[in-house]
Each structure stands twice: as structure tokens, then as C-alpha cells.
Length: 199
Image 1 (cartoon, rainbow, N blue to C red):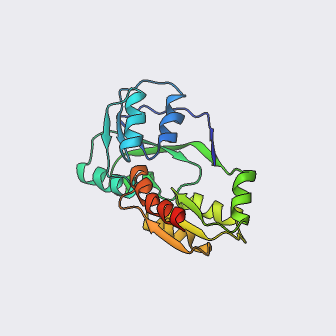
Image 2: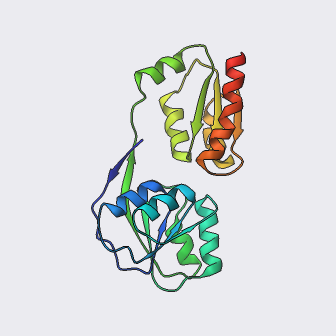
């Protein structure tokens, strides 16, 4: 996927809720002040928001975790949820249900990209292919793009839900990261890479 940023009017809010680094980039390009407190899904998103000039709280790594944290803390004032056009979890709906004054807007779209020639070649060959999956949507898009793949497929999924979304693949192996972040996904990939080298 590749992001396409959208032009929207940013509301005046006491807090902004970021569920991805791309959402931070989408909001940052629109300008505006950085006085709103940024509630961020995890460390990478938090680092992006901090670099953009926000004061930051970092959540446990998933949108659901962040929604629960906000529901417990019940921060005062209005909060803005900049969203992707396609999303697995509706953060704004969860916060409104928790009684938090929330507004939202779609600030970017993740547009599907065709597989590269190299990816298509690898998936048509006979050597095992390691496929890391970071989201439900990437799992579904990859399943559609590589339908009928010949290569034995070893999937590393960031969460159990993403692994379930990849069920359309006829995968030989599926491993799930121990926590929903890129570092844990990298750690999940390493034993697969060693197994592939030894095979």
C-alpha cells in the first residue's frame, strides 16, 4: 500500500488520537498548532508525533489498548481522531461510546499497489517465502494479490487477528509476534529466516 493524503480542515481540540505514523504525517502536513496532547497507539507513532511537535502519551501497541486507556483516564475536552479511509477499528466510535467528546475525519487513504515483479517471481517459485503482515488489510490485499501462489508460505503476523485475516493463504507456517509492534514482528521473523537458511 501507499498513502494518499487528503486535505481536510483540522478542528480545534484539546487532544488528538493517533493510531498510526501515517496519521501523524497526514495531520502534520496540514499545519495548525501543536498544543493538543497526542494520544498515540505505540512507540513508533509516539516518536513520529513527538518529532512533529506534540506532547505525547504512548499506548500499549493496539488501537483497542489505546481506547481502553482513554476510557479509563477520561481526559477532558474535545478529541480529534484522524483516520484512514479503511480501518480495522473505529477509534472515534469507541471513544464516543466511552463518553469522550470526539470528532473525526478521514485524513488519508492507503491505496493498494500491485506486487513488484520480484515479489511475483518469488511467489511463483518453489523456495519458502517469509511474508510479514502488519495489518488485517495488508493480509487481505496480499491474499488477493498472490492467490494461487506456488511458493511455500511462512507468515509472520503482528497480532493473532492479523493471522486470522491471512487464513485465505495456504500457509505452511504462521507465527504471531509477542506484542503488536515492529520490533516484536522482527523477532518473530528471525527464527523463520534461520529455518529457511538451514533448509
